[in-house]
Image (cartoon, one colour):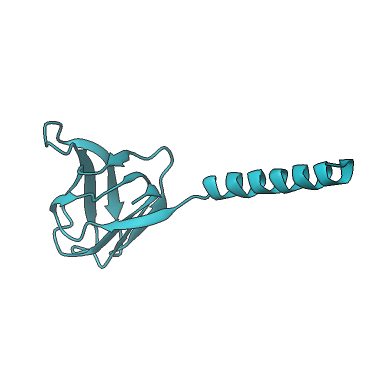
Length: 126
């Protein structure tokens, strides 16, 4: 092998490594709906809460409490946020959000009692 071939091979290997690193560093977002008070299964995969959105809340001014519950329901009422809804809506980013594992539950409670659009946005994989 000559020097030019070695340089070409090294460049191809470097490009492949850069593409692999870029793919591995891609953030995946997904959402889970918690449409009414009660216990809701998280699903499969792993995720960290990064955003919450509540729409069409009744009453229009009230609270929504969200809690993490372990998959075997041994750990309960570990609230990770209570928000005050005004004019029927609430939306915010969450810093250092709670992590959920496959099989965990999300518990929703509070004075907003109707079937409203309550979505949690996660980063991770599902």
